[in-house]
Image (cartoon, rainbow, N blue to C red; front, side, top):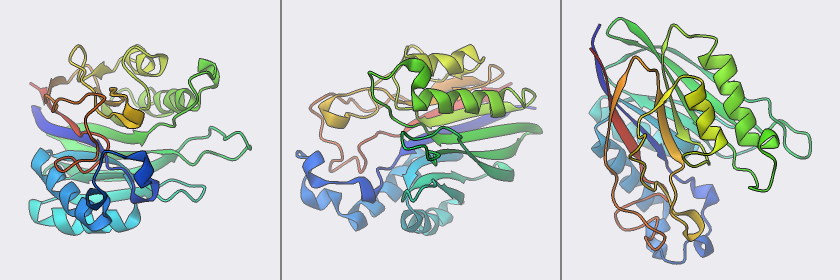
Length: 261
């Protein structure tokens, strides 16, 4: 059956992680939770996506987004991180029929031996008779001097690929989120090696400029049976204030149209 849908991924920047000194070029009023909430709802609705994968979503923000996005036909699911973290991953969807969801909690451990609490939120959809599985995740940042095989984000990526994607090869897969890695790095290459395509391959643009450095760390990967038409992003460099008057997060949302004849 034919498939034609838009999917988006967006790290919202949890209010719990905002410290004004980390955003010296952002006016203080732009960082106010209520103002950001209204701007985030408008930004998400403006993406006009059928499936929206969100990261750094707090329970209060999820409830507010449910209310704001319901008139646009969206229903949402939230799964919180463990270990007392204030946020998690959420997916809002419309049109496509959701068949169910689950939260897969990664087994990687912190330096003190505790499970990290990071997760992938996986939703199943009936997409024109095909089964579409969408995994939304926020892979853990780790020190760049740590060996690749010990990198926590790499461990999480490997677990996601081996225990979800490769165990269900009959499904059409979309894996997206904040990977905390850049194009060409081993973590990103692992998804390509697993047979998934990068929707923005050859067209990457910076998606955030954390710590004053613009970089592309947000991705949409998909099964080879799907074709992607990615959206072009607003221009972003090291000097672009984020959040700003026009962008309510320190990340830009990314989106692509996915097609199957």
